[in-house]
Image (tube, rainbow, N blue to C red; front, side):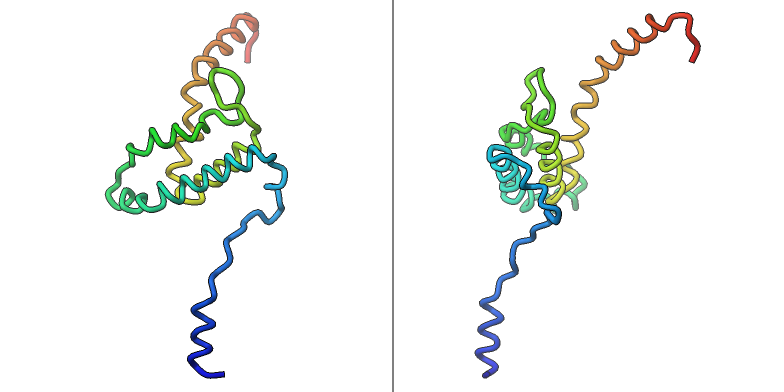
Length: 138
């Protein structure tokens, strides 16, 4: 085999796509959930991956992505009520993986975004507990 043919074969080779789903849990998602995960993956690869390194280098956050991020409609996936998107916690985990796969700094605010919203509920429950446990010591 000539060196030219060998080089030609190497140039024709492309690396297969990475499939990190070693346990095949992706098969547990229904068709609709799989489409959502694909939409998030495409968004991260097309919108975030090309710009995020520059933001990291400048120690800034790309605030211009927030409207695009909101348009994905993934706010509150895994939760029910109060305008959340619903869906399963498994889907929520897959979305977290897709976001963090490209850049974990994009996933962090999304997963923590619901925590401040829960503070009023925690306060109400704490007040209810303290009234029902009046006279009890902890």
